[in-house]
Length: 346
Image (cartoon, rainbow, N blue to C red; front, side):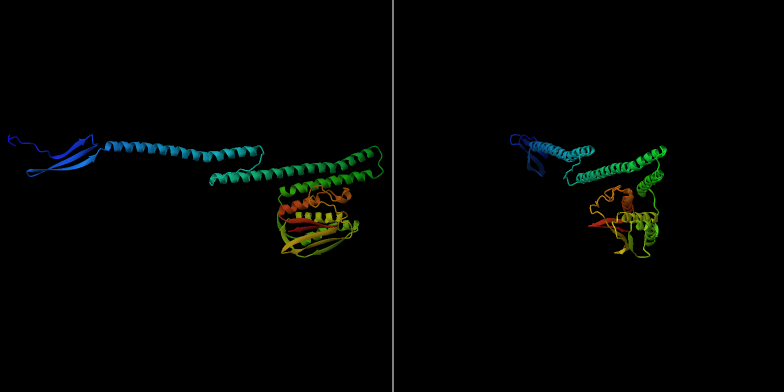
């Protein structure tokens, strides 16, 4: 430098912005002795790039938010729609409108729907059972009223006859007979209703001994009707049961056979069949139009004329069925032409 002035040499980093070219030059000046070296690097302008990144990020967040809202809506709809259908279904059940609920979500809601369908079926079955029980109760009350009406009328009529001096010596006997008939009916009704309600202790009992006692009680009735009884009893047959109710079961089946046997012989068998104790009693019928489905109903009698001297109260076989159902015995009626057989498997 001819003027003798010293020029300050740049050192370190310098950034030269090239606005029109949209980039900058970063220069590092390195003095080496009397020389000055410059190392340059081109740096792109990142402002636009960062702006693009920011806009893309905002757009991505907006799209993610929309997708999340849509998915949340679908999830809520997936839950609320079945719940609304379940609510309508429960309201229909409350109105006794029974249908079926079809939900295919493959999750817990579908299991709940299946449970509600089972509940609906159970309610329907229970309601039908209650209706059948109510009908049976109404029929029972009608039958009781019908069967009590005759003896009550006779007692009143013959009592008035005695009061008016019209007794020929048989009026009092008739009153006593009708009173005994009502007493017997009342006692059997109480027995029928008390089989399930009362506690019946279980002990080891001898079936053959109980049957022999019941057969002894029927000998007079067999003689009056001109019938014979053919028995085949295996000794020492024991079961766990209630002696009083098993005796009642044997007694009712025997008396039923004696009442309805047309003629000839009544056959009674007690033995073992496939390791189980089995009782069978067979007799001939005077008619073959017996309804074996209704034979277990209270007050159903197989004697069409409903002659009470012959057919009794119509409660013997229902008591047998109730005892069998209560203690898990199998009881059935088999009719082949004019021959009928009752079988009990203990």
